[in-house]
Image (spheres, helix red, strand yellow):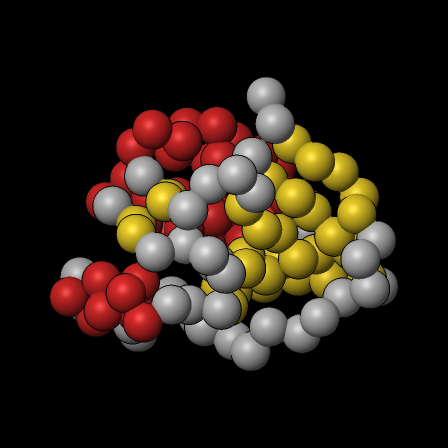
Length: 116
């Protein structure tokens, strides 16, 4: 479900085999993502490349990860936001809450693939 690459202290997280961040996958992704952002001082960038749809559960995942990151003095951002997802972010008025950054390629040092 999640692919995690690491370079220095930055973790780049992306979905594989999934093009939607929705209720169907929300519990599993939330657990995996929260483990990553829960480490103090860590920078986690969630790469949404290929994601075309996010429902309320999906936005809940992102907001909860952001909340955990802030509580643990970590950074959490999203990148590669498609036009479709950006429109959903604006419709739900989350553009001021979800930090969007430019995705920086990391050397593909895959740390783990979380599938269960």
